[in-house]
Length: 361
Image (cartoon, rainbow, N blue to C red):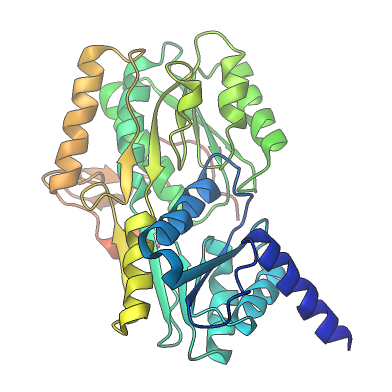
């Protein structure tokens, strides 16, 4: 009875979140989303939920979408994913790195359900796909603008967790800031959260107090933007979504994650029976990563350079990780003109030469 009560409560909660999505029976394709933050975070989860809404707009009454927000990574995630599968979802998108093992564990128990895991790399059963975006391409553009615009030569970086995705972003931003400003220094604060506005604001404030006049973030809320807005002469960049309400200052541009085309394509594949297990890693070229409008606070020549880099990244004529590059300890990594392999980038666990911080365990 207790288990049945728990499941009933879960059904009610999810139905409430989607306006009674299960009321019409099982004729529609059911599409589920598991979110690590709230849909109103203004960043990561907000953009994934825009993708969910795009699925509804594309397929109309042929689909029902359900979501659960604020799901912690770990055991709680496995319970939430299981609950969604039990409720008859045909495809479930799990949208945070820490959902990787829970997604694969649940997928093994529900072979007829399709599972899509964002930013992970494990596909242990034929009903699991992985997908991510080349955020590091956007970080390269941010680094270029940051290196050109800093007056203190100190750039602050709010990092979430020490996983390859975040380390790649730090390295990419640093490489491109250093290229245009050899005197630049990076100060990194690890927040150990994806979404915690208070903690993110404290990190931004601490970095500004340490002299940073540019704040980069790999966390999901707009709190660093608000903190920087209170300081004079500090610029920021939106993360995951445009965060354009803070333009033209402090936010001077942004990385925007556009998941809608992928979600529409994958749901369509379930509907027409063509879904297969795949690994997708797209960037600026295919449109999964967009660069938010560069505001007029950025000098015209810097803006032109940034847009030229965007075009070169998009058409493949430039790679954000092009040698010569050494690892932090001075050992050679990439020779002159050599570019990093996807394998090296996917498992990146080191800083490039010049960064003085240590990567925490």
